[in-house]
Length: 340
Image (cartoon, rainbow, N blue to C red):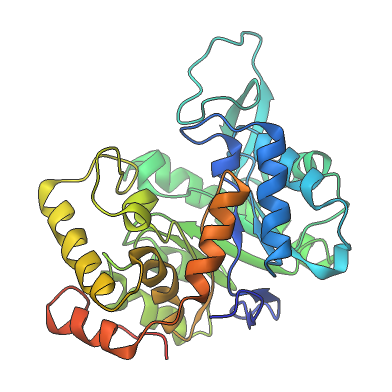
């Protein structure tokens, strides 16, 4: 696959390269990342043809946006697409010793969840300042889900904020040309229908429910979006690590140690891929783009070497027999669309 080839992002009309760069890793997710390594990762992506970059206020509590803006500053603004998130704004902490997890470093800020009109506007303006840009291209409603808020009154309250207040801010930003596309981030199953009932989105940024290991979202939620022309961006295509490295000590799945059953499943997938000379990471990165509504995959990276490896495996040819054998062995859904 060609990293620089573009696809249109749902109903937004925005064309993004089908390989993007996610900014969580160089926001110091689980690892310290020297500034020069973050800038080198962004430059390596650019040199490899990537023109779609995604970040968020949450990533490193502001650090990722600062690095993304600085890393892209030497490049022509009209040659790349930049997305960041709304739904959180940052407030300074008087003490530097608070729990920063999952970030190892980052800024001395605490996050405030806020999906109201004022909260969305504050988040947008803070991102402008950290990025050093008068506008960005795509706004993603971030982490409005039960993983962060539970399944009860708190989540209901935040959805009410978005529906009755925050969506007006997003509409104003889009009307003013300050964003060209609007999406929502999804970490699990079950919430896409709730968004579809409330607001008019261009796409969903799907982190982990659609990978080589998970395709249950094909049952109902993807078809409901496709019927409306809504597209997808796939974050965390390596399932937070294990699909990049295979089952080895220290590998994570869904940001936690995997079960032995999952390790065995990944091992079987890896063995089939490697029997055809295909790295596991290549299959993981390319698989989501078999779905015609997926516009891009956005793996993270914390160094130029990791970016270059992603570009290498993205370009790796994958024989159709790989997908056929994975389906035959029950390791991939029989109805899952595959590249080619």
